[in-house]
Amino acid sequence: MKKSVLTRYRVMAYVTGVLLVALTFGMIGKYAFELDAAEDFTQVVSIAHGWLYVLYLIFAFDLGSKAKWPVKKQLWVLLAGTVPTAAFFVERRISRELDAKSMGDAPAVAKA
Image: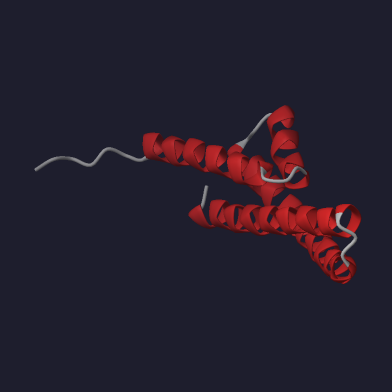
């Protein structure tokens, strides 16, 4: 598996996670504190998060299919973009797992 597949997923996981946290704070400001500016903010961030989440789904699905994950794991990764901060934890776990797997698959270098 190419490193670029993991990199695309990681970037989108962070972008999706940041936008979802920002949207959560915007919703708190809008409904709990009744801030007028929060309404426009949440509208813009929710649209951006929605479109970028679609890209996250595509890249996460691509990664999962190339890594040959079972369906349950694939769904777990896909849904991580819908829970605030979950994308950060899932991304870290997946990155470590795939890095360790790629290190194990690397051919041994002969020592001179």
